[in-house]
Each structure stands twice: as structure tokens, then as C-alpha cells.
Length: 337
Image (cartoon, rainbow, N blue to C red):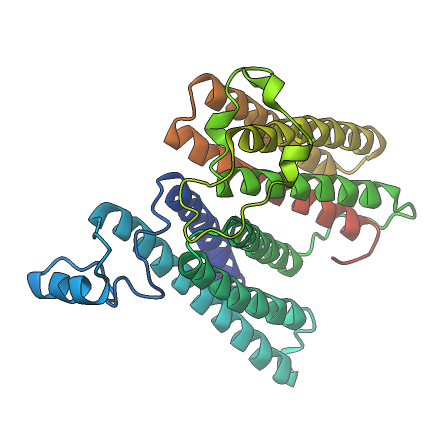
């Protein structure tokens, strides 16, 4: 396969991780509405700062106040997200051209994978627009976060597919692959719960370790108090006890996720003889324990922005390490994912 094509996929993977990190920073710094319109900022391609530009803003957005720092955070995120979308379009075009070039004999070019990425990017763009136009509606914000993680995972999976491991022999038993997929699903649920915590600004409402300081306020019924019917969702609209309950469920499922991954990983590690798969399990364990340590440290230090950002990035890395493990197990049994 063309070396330039592989490098382009690798560059897209790196950029996608950066975009996910910038998205997390935008949420955590409360800059999601730094620009109240989309795709520009107050009708401009950059943040307005000249007197004539501010006059236009005052005319078209009479109730808005330009906050340059927040606006630039939001726009930088959009610039990089747009560049990522362009790279995925290029990947799709290259895949079409290589498939049509019969002399290249490139049967491994992931055309359907590229098309799926194109669909995801278009939908993610719509979610980005709705995030702003619907004033940070939590369902949309959580969907936008999950969309970013999905695009990142698909790009990394594409990179793995074009670098098919050559030293993994076929295996008759598929149970390890199925176990790894189950653990991956449990992890995705945990990431979604984390997105729900972030979308509802619920992180600071559950302080204290190992349980919330005001755990007596926890209630299953309050979890069904959904954030709907508001004109603006910035900083959250749900009652204190609902946000505490949301955060505590996230902590509980984190324990379920950790135990599931440790059990599945240990089972795979003990049974496998392939050093590449054993190394993949060790990588998953290292990222998992780092993530658990970060989670506890964040609560102990009262949710500092940078540590919380690293917690989001580490969640993405844990997802990618699990995707890689699933891929290697699929390759070992001769399947593809």
C-alpha cells in the first residue's frame, strides 16, 4: 500500500486526538458559547476585535458580549476540526482512486471504512452546529463528545488495518475476542456517562472520596430528571441532587469498568502465547490504572482544569488501547473489525 497514504492516516489520527483534546478544553473552560453562531464567530471567520467589527456584533447580536479568550478557544477548536474533516475527505478520495487503479492491486484499501468516516464527520459537523444553536443542550453535547471519540477510534482502527500484523498466527477459539468486545462496550458506556457528567456540569457536585460528601442526597429517581425545555443550558440546569447522582453513577460504573477490563485482560494475558497481544494487554492495564489515579486525584484537588483535561485525554487513550487489543485478537483468529 502507498506509504504516503499510511502517513496521511497517521497524521489524521494524531490530529483527531488533538481535536478531541481541544473539544474537552473548550467544554472545561466554559468556552462552548464563546461564539454564539456557527460556523463563524459573530458572523466573522475570526474573533472580531476591530471597532467596525464590534459595531456589527452590537447590531446583529445586541444581547451578546464578546469574550475574546473564550471565543478564540472555540474558534481554534473549529479550525482544527475543519482541518480534520478535510483530511478525512482526502482519505476517502484517495481510497476511491486506489480502488479504481487496477494496476495498484491494493485490495486492502479500506474504502467502506473511509465512507463511514465521511458520514461520521458530516454528522459530527451537524452536532457541532446544534451544540451552539441549541445553547449546549446536554444530549447534543454528549453526542458531540461521543462523535469525536468515534471518529478517533475509527481512524486508529483504519491505521491498524493498513498495518496488518504479519506475525500473528490464526487461532481456533474466538472467546477472547468476544470478551474483549464486551469489555470495550462496558468502557464505551463509561465514556458516555463521563460525557453526561460534563454536559450537565455535574463534576463538582460529588466531592469527597470514595463516595460523595453529600451521598445521602443520591436518588435513583432524580436520575430521570432530564435537562429539557430550557433556553440556555450553560453551567447546567439540573438540581444539585440530580447532578450528584449523575456523578456518583459515573464513579460506580468506573469500578465496574475497571474490574471488567482487569478480569478480561488477565484472562487473555494468561491464555495467550503471542507477545504482541500480551503487550497490548499490559498497555491497557497501564492506561487504566493511570486513569483511575487521575480520577481520584482530580476529586481530591477539587477538579483543577488541566488534570480534568488529562482525564479526558486518558479516556481517549484507554479507548484506543482497547480498540487495538480487540483488533489484534480479531487478526489472531483471522477475522477483521
